[in-house]
Length: 168
Image: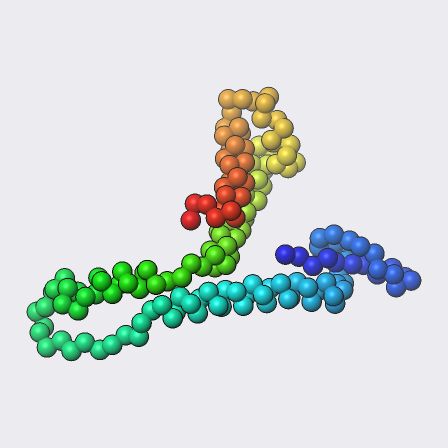
């Protein structure tokens, strides 16, 4: 999610610019409000899902234990611990918004690794950028360069899979 930036010329007319252009240091209030509203809606959905999860977990209760030599297994059996955990697990609702949010967080981590890998490949093989290294792979089919470029390309696919909800 991003907010479009604008630059202002001498006549106070808005000029569209994309990205983090230093001359585009202004945003329109309406654009800002749309992004804030979308983020607030996402937070509200996450809050509702997580409230559902919390409500599925029963209140804890004190257990009097006068027997100091009771082992964990018999304690669990006596108080139905395993059964209680299984019941709680079944009562936890589906959480698609939370799952999507966490998938995006995971994918952003992979995106950071992709950028680091691209820079590393370009520097290690003395190319001006990753695209130049990519296009040069066919000239050096048996080199380490090919493997590193392919791994970086695989990471791009992996990030896309994460965003779709795969490999959780």
